[in-house]
Image 1 (cartoon, rainbow, N blue to C red):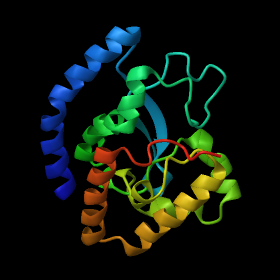
Image 2 (cartoon, rainbow, N blue to C red; image 1 turned 90 degrees about the vertical axis):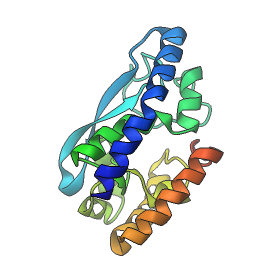
Image 3 (spheres, one colour; image 1 turned 180 degrees about the vertical axis):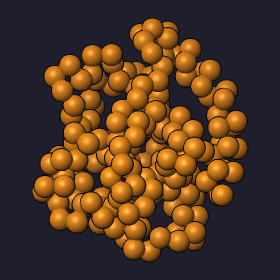
Length: 191
């Protein structure tokens, strides 16, 4: 119920943001504003995630890969969309529909997770709860851009799955607001 009420309120509140972002994206490269990607949700079910496009149109010509620090595929507008997590706002629709939750492990792309499931023990346990727009891993660790990062983030996801509660969701929600306003963790770690 909280997911539906909060996401509904945030969808209405974010309408002006869509107009501003749409204008900026069209000015920069005249490409599409939104895009969809397949992701894995609760119990391993596949679904399409909606995001505001933050990368160049030809970003995956050579195939999918994790973003890296100072990634040349990210547009100028996209840099700020990612920094402030604005690119994730359309997922509120999926929360309202019940496909996602506001808080939970971030859904991964099936093409990327094949290796993660093979290389990381207990990776699939994160599918015991709905995926979220934000999660315990997102507010406690930087953007994951490797198997090593995914392994570390999994420890946070498993903590969340084991200790799932309304109180933990509230704490994560407020930590998410802090992360959004200070831009922390939106870039992959320097290696």
